[in-house]
Amino acid sequence: MEAQGRSVKGLDWVSLLMADVKDGVGVYLSVFLLTVRRWEPDEIGIVIAAPGIVGILVQAPAGALIDRTTYKRWLLVGASLIIAACCLVVVLSTGFTPILVSQLVVGLTQSVYAPCVAAITLGIVGHSLLAQRIGRNESCNHLGNMLAAIAAGLIGRFISYEGIFYFSIAQCLALVAAVFIIREQDIDHCLARGAEKDEKEADAAGVKTLLSNRKILVFTVAMALFHLANGAMLPLVGQKMGLVDPQNSSLYLSAAIIIAQGVMVFVANYAGRAAENGRKKVLVLAYLLLPVRALLFAFIDNPYALTAIQLLDGIGAGLFGVLSILMIADLSKGTGRFNLLQGVVYSAIGLAAALSSILGGFVVKHFGYPIGFASLAAIGGLGLLFYWFFVPETKDSSTDQEIEAVEAHASAVPQ
Image 1: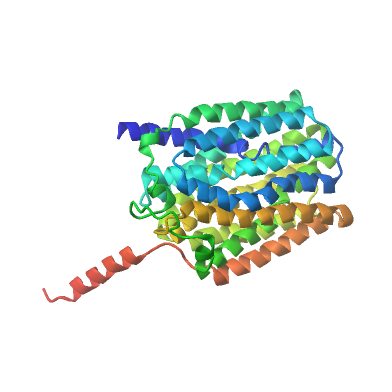
Image 2 (image 1 turned 90 degrees about the vertical axis):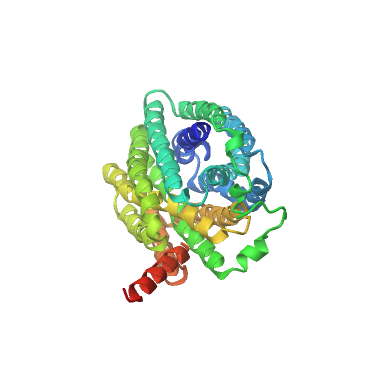
């Protein structure tokens, strides 16, 4: 138990340090290209969308690989070193092509992080403790994002925007060290892929089999609609802040991320506990807040107000990060393809986020920021309706029903 406790602590550190690493500094690239390199919004949209486009192609195969391999820790190590190299390319290159290629490579490697950490978590704690553990993982991850945003904001404001990328490289190296805190012998690789027993079949379930399940199909569509509305939102807000006050844009953007991530730390912990009583009713709040946030961004220009609105993103993303993984675990339980299903869902999310960035950049260039955000709000409203009317509850309540039946039978027996 003491040894496994070390691995659980390792999960804390990996989740904390994985923060910005998995996205290759994410939204800061958008502002860097706009304010430092003076790129056009549509060019920025293409580069920001590049990782998602690659993810569409590799996410499902990456999930299948994670199901099969017993070298999950080494996948995280390799991905982190590659992300570090891509950050270095962004700093040293000025042309469109090298930076685009670096982001395509980011998309290839970042597909490993979420399913691999979730698989290792499931392999260590099992299904019964997964909800609370995923909540803790997400809390640590959001705390890491918050601390990284504080550091990045200060570096971007008082040193240079390039310094943010060097900071991300340092995070990558620290993550490599954290991965080795997790002990290989504490990971049950059979359990890590959602198998209920030590089955040897390599093809317990394939993509076609998974998607033939209506519950899985509608869930995947709902996840995609959420990110079609959400994917371009923060990068566009960062651009809007950069145009209003270029000198302080990194501070505004960092403050927005800090507010959101700070809220997520607490929301993720709550979500892990609340999800024990059902998944759907908890996640619906994230869908409700998405169009509201987009409409506020459409009609408000004050950078302080834009920053404050990110409170809503903190609530929605905190819920989504926990509940999406738990619902995938519910839907894949017993199939032996937990990570493959993660890959399929994340492929749909990657496609949606990429289309969101391209659509957002195009609409903003031709019609302005208010129409761009209003378009995202309309998509968010559609996603809310689809989720509520078509996605079922995924938590298996058969055990609870059996207990209730036994209690009802006992109460009916004459004393």
